[in-house]
Image (cartoon, rainbow, N blue to C red; front, side):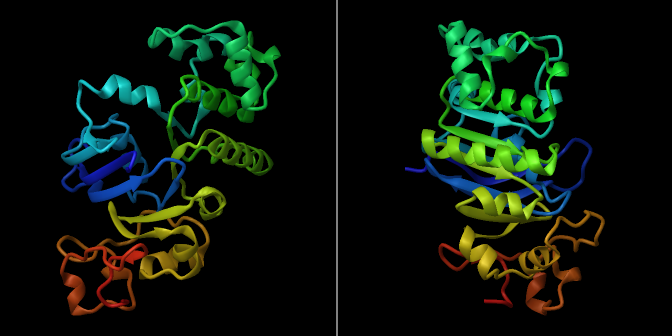
Amino acid sequence: MTFLAVEHLSVRHRRAVTDAVRDVSLEVAPGEVLGVVGESGSGKSTLLKAWLSLLPARSGLVLWQGRPLTSASLRAFRRVVQPVFQDPRAALDPRLAVREALAEPFQVHREPFSEATLARLLDEVQLPAELLPRRPAALSAGQRQRVALARALALSPRALLLDEPVSALDVSVQAQVLTLLHQLQVARGLAMVLVSHDLAVVRTLATRVAVLFAGRVVEQGPAADVFGDPGHPYTRQLLAAGIERGGDWATAPEPGCAFRLRCRHAQPSCLETPTLSGGAHAWACPVLK
């Protein structure tokens, strides 16, 4: 059974006239890593926040263990589905020592813990117990992100939703944290949703990939297929560039494919709203099928 999913999810920011996330349906199974890629402004972070129920959806559902997430199930959901955000300085209260930050999830959910429990959490993210009395300002960026990760792991979650988890770190530290994430994912059997503009980061961890453009999923499938034989023109362009492009390029209005003004393959059929088709590896392009 799919552990975590969104169905036909649409999200619109306040005062906006169009949706930032448009009719997105995705799922992640236990032990699977879903990578979500796309340029700036494509809706990646908005999707993740709505999936965490931190932003309201205009329409659609968040599904947890096959059932719609409700206000009654939200507390239990947030125990087993934990976020890890881009900036650990924002994620950690500067007034709290590491000890207090790690203890907080146990206190909120009224779970017993000890000093040894907190030390084991630090050990799991490859940090010494000597850091427990320190505050975030006394830690390096890499150490802060590891503490944020340890706190996310405190209540033994089944899924982590990660928003650009290494983009604020130096390249050498990025590699260490990515290796740690892979080790934790395998050891704990975690489901993960990994949002990143860095294709190399997603290649490192993801088993499946979804490509977002203008709030829509334009391609999804096994990572090897999407990276090795991309179907949608936008995915091909993104991979050819190798990096995220800025979000200032022209986007065609609805209805129709939002990418059509930038696509050399555009045809009259692109004026119709495209749908994903093609099985396990699917893309929303009526021309390149």
